[in-house]
Image 1: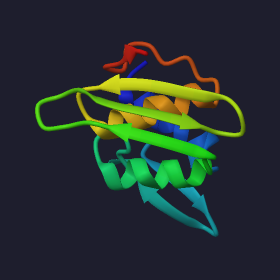
Image 2: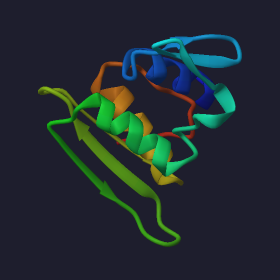
Image 3: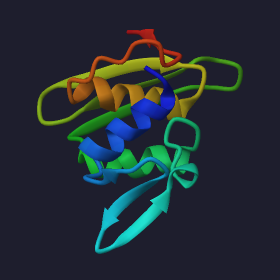
Image 4: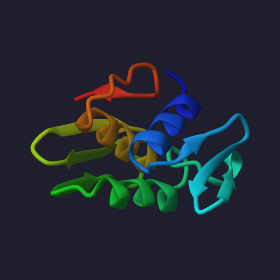
Length: 110
Protein backbone atom coordinates (compact mmCIF):
# COMPACT_ATOMS: atom_id res chain seq x y z
CA UNK A 1 0.00 0.00 0.00
CA UNK A 2 1.32 3.44 -0.87
CA UNK A 3 0.90 6.54 1.28
CA UNK A 4 -1.42 7.96 -1.42
CA UNK A 5 -3.61 4.87 -1.15
CA UNK A 6 -3.63 5.15 2.65
CA UNK A 7 -4.56 8.83 2.36
CA UNK A 8 -7.48 7.97 0.08
CA UNK A 9 -8.73 5.26 2.47
CA UNK A 10 -8.52 7.58 5.49
CA UNK A 11 -10.23 10.39 3.57
CA UNK A 12 -13.09 8.07 2.68
CA UNK A 13 -13.51 6.07 5.89
CA UNK A 14 -12.55 8.59 8.55
CA UNK A 15 -13.22 11.99 6.99
CA UNK A 16 -16.34 10.83 5.11
CA UNK A 17 -15.13 12.34 1.85
CA UNK A 18 -15.63 11.02 -1.66
CA UNK A 19 -12.33 10.27 -3.37
CA UNK A 20 -11.84 11.45 -6.94
CA UNK A 21 -8.85 11.02 -9.22
CA UNK A 22 -7.44 14.48 -8.47
CA UNK A 23 -9.45 15.76 -5.50
CA UNK A 24 -11.54 14.96 -2.45
CA UNK A 25 -15.22 15.90 -2.40
CA UNK A 26 -15.81 17.17 1.13
CA UNK A 27 -19.56 17.67 1.10
CA UNK A 28 -21.61 20.84 0.65
CA UNK A 29 -20.25 20.95 -2.90
CA UNK A 30 -16.78 21.80 -1.65
CA UNK A 31 -13.62 20.00 -2.66
CA UNK A 32 -9.93 19.86 -1.90
CA UNK A 33 -7.14 19.06 -4.38
CA UNK A 34 -5.30 15.85 -3.46
CA UNK A 35 -2.01 17.71 -3.16
CA UNK A 36 -3.36 19.92 -0.38
CA UNK A 37 -4.27 17.02 1.94
CA UNK A 38 -1.22 14.91 2.88
CA UNK A 39 -1.79 13.41 6.33
CA UNK A 40 1.15 11.01 6.08
CA UNK A 41 3.48 13.97 5.48
CA UNK A 42 2.00 16.99 7.29
CA UNK A 43 1.20 16.96 10.99
CA UNK A 44 -1.68 19.42 10.63
CA UNK A 45 -3.42 17.03 8.22
CA UNK A 46 -2.64 14.03 10.44
CA UNK A 47 -4.28 15.86 13.38
CA UNK A 48 -7.27 16.62 11.17
CA UNK A 49 -7.73 12.87 10.56
CA UNK A 50 -7.10 12.10 14.23
CA UNK A 51 -9.80 14.54 15.37
CA UNK A 52 -12.25 13.22 12.76
CA UNK A 53 -11.65 9.66 14.02
CA UNK A 54 -12.87 10.78 17.46
CA UNK A 55 -10.43 8.67 19.46
CA UNK A 56 -11.20 7.79 23.03
CA UNK A 57 -7.47 7.92 23.71
CA UNK A 58 -4.23 8.58 21.88
CA UNK A 59 -0.55 8.71 22.75
CA UNK A 60 2.41 9.92 20.71
CA UNK A 61 6.14 9.77 21.30
CA UNK A 62 9.11 10.91 19.33
CA UNK A 63 12.23 12.91 19.50
CA UNK A 64 14.91 14.48 17.44
CA UNK A 65 16.68 11.69 15.56
CA UNK A 66 14.40 8.99 17.01
CA UNK A 67 11.62 6.97 15.48
CA UNK A 68 8.11 8.35 16.09
CA UNK A 69 5.45 6.19 17.73
CA UNK A 70 1.68 6.56 18.03
CA UNK A 71 -1.13 4.58 19.63
CA UNK A 72 -4.77 5.40 18.94
CA UNK A 73 -7.83 3.82 20.58
CA UNK A 74 -11.17 4.27 18.85
CA UNK A 75 -14.19 2.80 20.69
CA UNK A 76 -12.29 -0.18 22.04
CA UNK A 77 -9.93 -1.27 19.26
CA UNK A 78 -6.52 0.32 19.24
CA UNK A 79 -3.73 0.58 16.71
CA UNK A 80 -0.04 1.24 17.17
CA UNK A 81 2.69 2.16 14.73
CA UNK A 82 6.19 3.50 14.56
CA UNK A 83 7.68 5.33 11.61
CA UNK A 84 10.39 7.82 10.79
CA UNK A 85 7.85 10.69 10.88
CA UNK A 86 5.08 11.46 13.35
CA UNK A 87 2.40 12.11 10.70
CA UNK A 88 3.00 8.65 9.19
CA UNK A 89 2.94 6.98 12.60
CA UNK A 90 -0.36 8.69 13.49
CA UNK A 91 -2.00 7.71 10.17
CA UNK A 92 -0.84 4.11 10.45
CA UNK A 93 -2.09 3.86 14.04
CA UNK A 94 -5.50 5.24 13.04
CA UNK A 95 -5.71 2.84 10.11
CA UNK A 96 -4.90 -0.14 12.32
CA UNK A 97 -7.42 0.99 14.95
CA UNK A 98 -10.22 0.96 12.35
CA UNK A 99 -9.16 -2.40 10.96
CA UNK A 100 -7.18 -1.49 7.86
CA UNK A 101 -4.21 -3.76 7.15
CA UNK A 102 -1.38 -1.39 6.32
CA UNK A 103 1.76 -2.99 5.02
CA UNK A 104 4.47 -1.33 3.02
CA UNK A 105 3.77 2.27 4.04
CA UNK A 106 7.11 2.85 5.72
CA UNK A 107 5.72 1.02 8.70
CA UNK A 108 7.21 -0.95 11.51
CA UNK A 109 4.63 -3.24 13.06
CA UNK A 110 4.35 -2.65 16.77
